[in-house]
Image 1: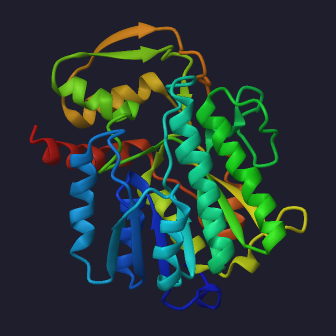
Image 2 (image 1 turned 30 degrees about the vertical axis):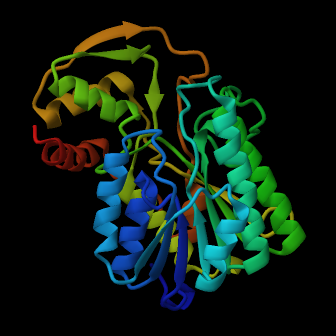
Length: 336
């Protein structure tokens, strides 16, 4: 972190979704630099519980880490756990993900992403942490935004129910920040990837299919561009936000709420990403080319100037380097 005057003392950090991809990496980082972490997760079977438990076991070896199993939509239980811990910062990452399922199972999205988010906001209203940081998504930009996306772009044309819930999160956080003077920051993540990732993500699925000799399905790969963002870069950004005094951050409309893009700002064409994945795995992919799915945006690209101005950092790891780290972990974890 640049400028020691902007740092805060060792803190107590509450992380929801702590056994998830981002939650695990964030908890690991914060523990490594001396913070106390209370991790919450319901270990739901949306994807491999075995993988979530493997992440969790690594965290449990740290003396400053405490874990509780809870569905964050259970507001009473969430408050019971959070209040005695007295977190300085709450990082809310628990959510139902899945842009590739644009219309399916809306109730699970509503439960996790709407009820769960309101539960987290209400808990923060009662315990008043110094800073409430939450995961949003680049999917909020929908179909009308012009790349590269700036945070000031309109975000009212979501192309999936998931994206709609994430935009709703931003609006609820903005309202709560104004009503309760709760410093809040939303993070619009762009296609995160890396070790210990989610098996439902395309790059992870591709890797499994490539090593198993199965064909991979590419949706309009010649026109599909993604702002692939390495997990370590996202964690660096969150860590800096955890350690900064939130009143030093920009605010929207005199309300202590803001959103930041967290992306690599270097979109890569999907077909080139797959070629790099083939290289780091040392295997050739069999490909099946089809049209893009309904609800899929062809290009994602982040303007990260606002983030860089605020914290002195923005993601910049090349895909070649990030995939090399992923492949090393992937081969070890799957013994291939």
